Image (tube, rainbow, N blue to C red; front, side, top):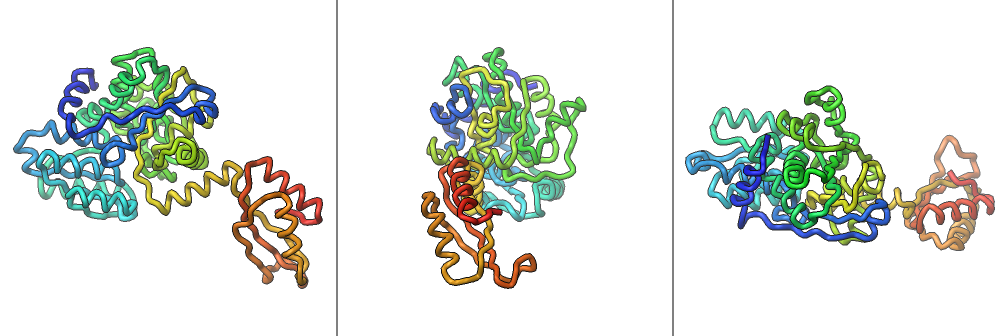
Length: 398
């Protein structure tokens, strides 16, 4: 088990490589969570995530001879960048295996840091298997994304930052994938401030820890499905499981819809752009699903989000917040019918974003047309007002 001396040694090794990221209080999130909340802005770390800490400590702890043989890893993106930048900083050659569908910005950044990037398979597991085969053929040192004591100790430096910046922290909320961040942060927090609660948050579509903890051992999932690719792993690590089981007080899960709301709220009100995994902790606060002791520190663990995915997530978040509404209406297919409908919508102040006509539909009468509309609204109450206004005007809303 990782102890305080391991984390202190990691901090010394990482000096000059890792930044001490800021902590900012958020009044908006505090109000919605029902608890005073501060944000640990680790998405502002070099490479855009906490992964630099663990990868950097692992590589820094290698001998000169080991570094000369090179390092190998598999990653969906953030760990890849951490390994690439750390290897460059400590003079090691890095070969990184990433899934073929890894976000393009993460692939480009990893190559930009000097790593030899190889795209293999549709997910992390396939990339991991390919990296292991490469390692057997060529030698070198494998830098695991989470299940290694030096990696856990490196992530633990983030926990030291938190307890130093917020010494009265009552709860620390941490996203969990394989468990490296939670294991490291919980180790640092519990060793320095035993009374502080540590809450881990998993995406509901990749929640391997609840079943594993219930079974008393790491258990894998058959498949994972979540927008939070940074925490989309099928199985906890053996070592990270042991740390989480002993040092994390509570595990909660959040839906993709809640994660999208978190991304939207952070962008709109906290002015922080994070990837879905980075918003998992905030999503749990918005759901009010965890037992919290104030003040709460939510770790924003990463900010490497593909712009196209970000656009879709923000749209989903707007929908969940009642700021975006899609519906269908049947009209008589005659001149002026659509104009009259749009005029009635205009009286409510809703802003029409898109209109589609459908005439060839087996459910429609010969003289009917179905209209699909997407409108911008001000929240659930405004949607109710719009629907009531349309129904009163003879427009049944589907």
